[in-house]
Length: 333
Image (cartoon, rainbow, N blue to C red; front, side):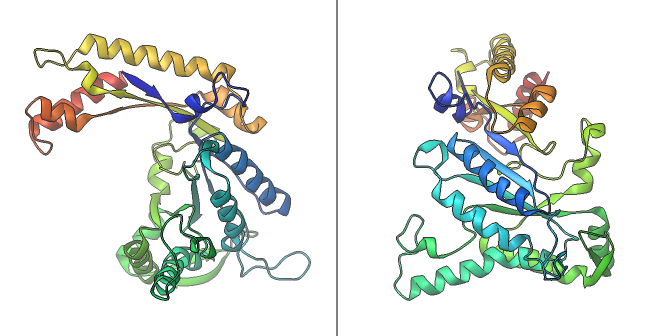
C-alpha cells in the first residue's frame, strides 16, 4: 500500500545508526574547519542511504583575498573533494550512487565558473571516449573526470531576473564585504546557464525570492538550498522523512477510488513518520535539533499513470487532471 523512504529499510532495526530521513540540507561557512566538516557530514549521510544538498555561497570567491594575503581557492575548487568523496562512498553501503546537490547564488563572483563546470567536464568525457577510453557510467576511466556526482543549481533572485528582462548589468558581490566587486551582463550569464543546461542538464535553477516568499516558517531563517531532488526546501541543518502511497491499491473492484481507505492510510503513515523522528539518529546535533523542532515530513503517491489507465482516463485530459487534483487534495488535508 505504501513505502517509507529507503533509509528506513536500510537502517531501522539494524546495528547501524537509526537514520530515517532521506533528505538533508547542510551548511558550510568560509573556514577550512567548516569545509572539511562538510565532507565528513556528507559522508555519513551517504553511508546511511540518504542524500544531501547545501549552498556554497558563504565561501569567498577566487577573486577575493585571504587574511594571509593570498587569493582564495573559491567554492568550485572545494567541490572537487566533496565530489570525489561522493563517488567513493556508495549510498546505504549498497551499489547505488550517492545523492548530492550543490547550490551557488547568482551574485557570487565565481558564478560563471560554477555554471560551466560540468559542461566543460562533459566535453572531456566526449573527447576521451572518442580516444578509446571507457567513459560510460561506472566505466574504468570515468573517475578521471570531475564533478560527476552532484546536481548543480544556481540560486537566482528577482533582481537578477529583472536585469535579464531589462538587458542590464548585474552586480556580483564579495562574500566578506557584501559590496559589488564586478559587473556582468545579466543576459550573457543567462545564456551561459541555458547553454550549459542544454549540454549536460546542469545547472538547474532555484528561484530564491519566490522560495522564501512561500517560506512556511520565515522567522526561523532563510531557505538557501534544497535536497538533491529539490522537492525538500527548508532550513540549513535540517532533514525530511518521506513516504509514498501506491494509488493502485486504492482502486476498488467497481473502478471507484476508495476515498476513506486512502485518507486513513495517509493519517497512519504521517503518524508513523512523525513517531520515527523521535527514535531517529542524526549525523549532527544541529540537524537533530532542527528536525525534532520542525518535524519535516513529505508524503506523495506513485502509480498515478496506472490508475488513470485503469480508470480509462487519458494522462493529458481534464478528467485525469481532476482525479489527480482530487487525490492530492485528500492527501494534503
